[in-house]
Structures are given as structure tokens and as C-alpha cells.
Length: 466
Image 1 (tube, helix red, strand yellow):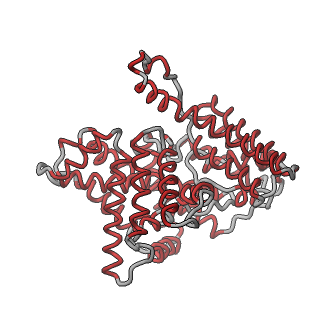
Image 2 (cartoon, one colour):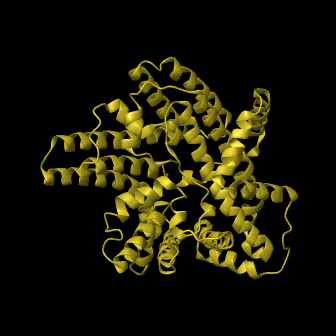
Image 3 (cartoon, rainbow, N blue to C red):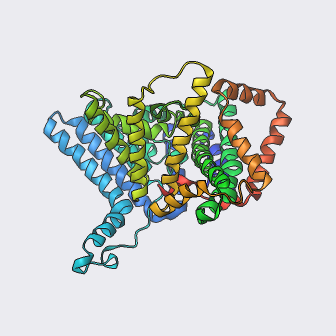
């Protein structure tokens, strides 16, 4: 069930109405949201509901057992059970065929073939997101940073809450669980903010990401060698804004939908292409994942507390695993390695502070944008040959910048809406909210009409595959 679909619009209107009718009774409203969340996920494939239930039951019981135990060795064994159970399921569905296929290639000389070891495995939507979410719960209890949740219903809702279930943000238990028992209150400002986020998320997805993807990026990646340097460069920039519009658009809609139900999920993106350093980029891009990797991987490895060399090793390992989190592909691993080296290079070059002066500031931003776009080539390419073809096409001199006019317009919209400072965007938002209700209604009606008629309804979100 896509956010940008008529089915979800009907689904959410029904859930929204029933939820606020039950707002004063915690158990009925939690049951409603839990049932709605399972229905939402089961719409994709009901067979995978068992995986969510497995993670929920496992980590609820592990958390409760750790809360009752004071024996360090028993608590460590319980944490290991959670890690093995969750990562075992994730590893099987997401990585088994990848590693089995690579092993088959290594053993080809002794007669092992890929057909003998590969299985027909369908990757469950959102498994990487809710796995990391439940793991943070047990790890926080083990560290003593969180007390176990006593209500299985509340915990189940934390795991399966439908707005962010399949593509994040990755929510921490300590932030979400305390919100469940509070009687929800929907202020006018929350209602306006929620609708604005959903509206803007749809614009990012339907208008920017899908049009750039279908009219510019996909044709380029179908055969990079046939394009000239100008269009190749534009397509690489287009992918940068496509993946940002697609993923941040989903996050906006998830956060806005949750806001309409009285929940605060926090921010997941903050104009990442305005970054002036590699480290700043990761405080702006997919914030919930980058902070998870920092808190549960980079810092436990030692962070920057054990000297420069160990810091560089920790950065590299963290980004390698961050790349592998995105999928079973050497290209994702290479993309993670690239960003690890970029973080190291930023430290060595002294890119730790925001440069002074507008010229230095924008120069640094432009350089960072080019580097990030190079990384997106590695991310988007299905293999090394395709990445090399895309990069070499930059030097070709044929058919430069021959793209439809509306692609230029959408591209310009992507740039104009991303570049302005946050204060400027906030003034624009306030200006929209200050419009007469009729004018706002017309704007929403136009967007709804676009969603109902757009071909992009058939386009899933890019991060559903992760």
C-alpha cells in the first residue's frame, strides 16, 4: 500500500476517524493502530507478518528477562539471543543468496554451481528498518539506558507502527514508547504541520522524484554509453535529487501521518546537499540510520577515543556495514567504503568546521555535492561495468542537454526547493498556512488530482528494496 495511492488515502481516513473517536481509551486505540499496522503490512504480503510477530515476541521476552536479571553473563546471553535471532532472520532473507552465490563462484573448480546453492527468496519489505528498531530496544536495556516495556500491546505497536514501518524513520523505543499511553491531543498547529508534511512529501515523490526518475535517470541508466557528457552529468544530478525526493518524501509523509495521529517521529532529513563536509552530510541524510550506526556501532567500536588510526578504522568499518545494510551487492559495499574514505579525507583536510564567508561556504557545498553525486553513481549502478560506463560517458560529446523542457522545470523545482536555508523554507510554509482556507483547499485538491491521475502511482519508493 503506497502512500501515494488512493488505497492508502481511504485506509488512513478510516483509521484517522476511528482513532480520534477512541482517543480517551488507551487499549482500544492501541489495538486499532496495531490492527491497522498489521493490515497495512499484510497488504504487501501477509505471509511476512510472521516475521514481525517473531521479532516482537523475541525482543519483548528478551527485554523482560534482562529487566529481571542482575547477572551480567545472563544479560549478555540474552542480548546475544536477540542479536542472533534478529540478524539471523535479516541475514537469511537479505544476504543468503548473495554470499552463497559468491561462495559458489569460488568453488566452481570443484563442481559447485549457483543453481545448487541459491534459493528462491523474496525480500520482505521493511525488514532492515524494523530489525534495527527492535535491536535498539534490547541493546538499550542491556546498557541500562531503558527499562523494559511491560505492555506487549505497546511494544507490538512500537515495532509495527504503520507510518514508518516499511521505510523509516528508524524510531528508538525511548522516544516512541512514552508517547503511546498519553491521551493524544491534536492542536491546530499539529494538524496544519501534518498536512503540510504530507503535501510536501507527495510533491517530492510524485512531482520531483518520479518525473526525474522516469524521464531522465532511468533512460540514462538503461544505456549510459549512448549519452553525451552534458546529459550524463544532468542525469547524475537528477539521481541525487530523485533519491532525495523519493526517500525524504516518504519520511515527510510518514512523519506527517504520525503527527495527525498525535505522534512525533522527529526529523530524518535536513537539506543534505547543503552540507559543507562529509561528517555534516551524515547529520543531514537519513538521520535515523546514521545516528543508529553512530550509537550502536561506531561508538562501541571505540569511536574517536583511541587515536587517529583507530578512528579511521572505525569510520571505515561503520560505513562499510552501513553500505551493506542497503543491500546484498558489492556496489553498496563500495559506496560505503567511498563514504568511509570521504569521512577520513574530510578529517585530514580539516573539514570539521563550517567555512567562513559566503564564497568559501558555497564552494565547499558545491565540492561536497560533486563528491556525493559520485557516490550515488556507485549506489545506483548494478555493477562495476555500469558505473564505469556512466563515469566515462561524462567525457562524451554527443547530444548534450537534449532533454524535454518539463524535465528542466522539475529539475529547477528540485534545486530551488532544496537550496534555500531552513528559515526561508519556514517563511514559505508560514506564508502558505496564512493563505485563505479556500486557497489552501485548492492547492490540496490539485495535489490530490495529480496523485489520482499520475502514472507514478505504480512507482514504489526506492528504499522499499532495502
